[in-house]
Length: 167
Image 1: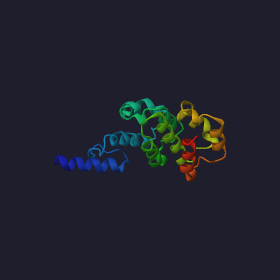
Image 2: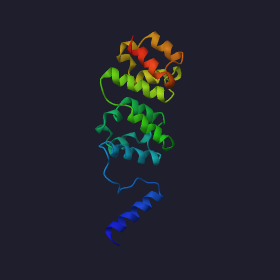
Image 3: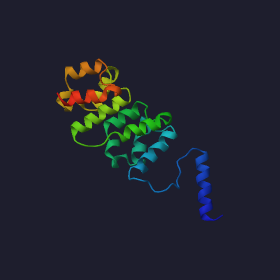
Image 4: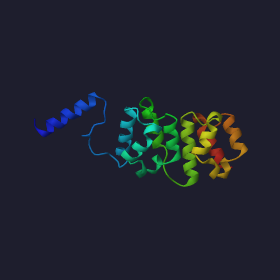
């Protein structure tokens, strides 16, 4: 069997088993390979805390700073990296650019808001993961009261973010 035909047959067989393809094209960007690797772990039910060290090394998560942080670890520990939730999890990862601390905190809170988790039930997790204590305007009773009142939901995000920035 010619080599090209053999590779096509292997790719088709892997697709049948829902496994990541080893003959895929070059990634469109330098982080696509990392996401593809994580997606493979997710599909196999291994994008979880029990497999974190293995996935961290195999997928080289340290090469992309938004994946090498407490927010990603917390999301994986909470079970948000499962295959049924993969597209939403990948979108969440994309929304978390590195940057200065205030911008990073704002981006992190926006992720919680968009995910419907910028609320009092998730306050402790968001406080730790987004490191709200490192930016004093967010570490106060007014912010807590606004979150408790439901003002941090995604439909109101632009107003809430504007309020935070103007304090």
